[in-house]
Length: 318
Image 1 (cartoon, helix red, strand yellow):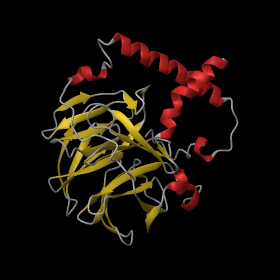
Image 2: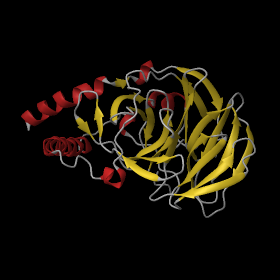
Image 3: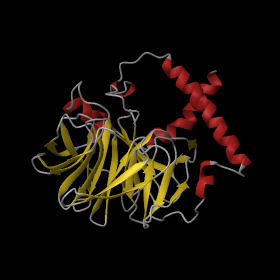
Image 4: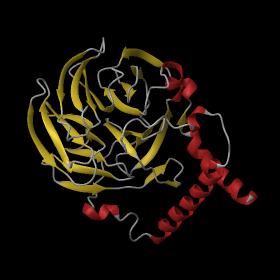
């Protein structure tokens, strides 16, 4: 056991060194957020927040003033749909739904419903890739799918690497944001944001935002869920389910590469690490270590806020 713990510390140490210390995270601006909004996705377009909200009977897509937080326009989904992540494409809004296998397309100026398309599996987060003419979509697993601009589905990579080269499977990938340098993602029930390399799925950095929750939010605030890149200022805005505010922060994504992957694996992309037995052995070993470490942590009492997951609000599995 002593040898195992020492080995685990050696492996995990490089991972921790890539995390942003929450005490160093600076809030640049704060804008009020509708605390009744069960936020699922956030974008910035033409100087406005575009936000998707969820829950059956409460789902919507809305345009919000970035200076005041006032809702300027809103379209409510029918009670049969649970709204999820959204992105902007060709002056339209694309909004996923959770289990209904349909995405809605709206006019970005008027929120008029202009079309839809279907997809397989659950819809969680979506972003328009800036490095290629297709979309990235998360479904709550370790897989990030991509869709071409004609909405033909393909699957792409599902194992993520930390910067030390140690395999680390990241599941519950949620809200997505595509930038010039990286895919930005939050993980359901974590106060962390992950920066993922376009070219190889490598987690090149993680940012701990727990200090923002502790300083500005309250016990009624749900999980972090909303990341929007402000291209004009080079900053990011974040919020969450039933949060009190939107927060502007800086995230350095320069550690991620900018090249897009050239391999398209189709549905076989879900068969991870196929044909690479040595790598599979490494992954298996790391997963076993992760399980053991998790078991040890479950038996360790701690008052650390970061170990406490935000309360689950409503019947949302995302």
